[in-house]
Image (cartoon, rainbow, N blue to C red; front, side):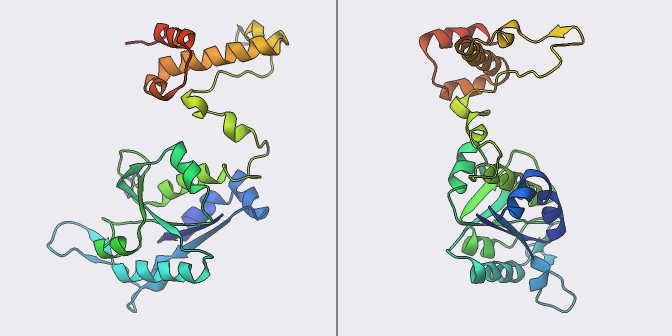
Length: 243
Ligand code: 4F9
């Protein structure tokens, strides 16, 4: 996977993504991340890329020309015509299902806006997907792009150490993860649940499934609609709903 990020803050995204698991995946050449500085495509000698809005109103807008120049520079290197994701509160809300879809692509472009946004005309020409990470306003699209790149990268084969762990975590089956414990066996007077010390794998799996269902009912009852539960499991969930 080749990620291209069109931004006015290239060091912010590169610094944020170069550590930890994503950094290691880059070293292993499982993915590339390239930040393109939109300012490099400014069309005036002062390197300005923003201007006042027609019709008046507060704030500045990013101009179409520099954004389009940055996009064209990516097209010159990309192996195939990439999807272009614009990070915006006006987009569809990002989800694990969307991450799985985007993980199938060879190239992805993230367009990060700043100031009050970007001239509509260049968005019309280049953006294929409008994506939000939630209903709040940020200072720019960089953090949402980093969130999406993290979620997508961990689905790429080889990025996680344990290649089954991506599948078995939260949102598999639309259920939350069961509680987990490590040493010591007793901490602050709290013992690890007896069943986990039994070595009886079938019973442990049964207990974990029940815990996932109880936890989902208590904390994220909205997820239960999409979960596939047996009649018995539905009754267990119902017992733990707070409303
Ligand atoms: C983008 C907020 C995606 C949430 C971009 C200001 C944004 C955002 N999800 N806020 N610029």
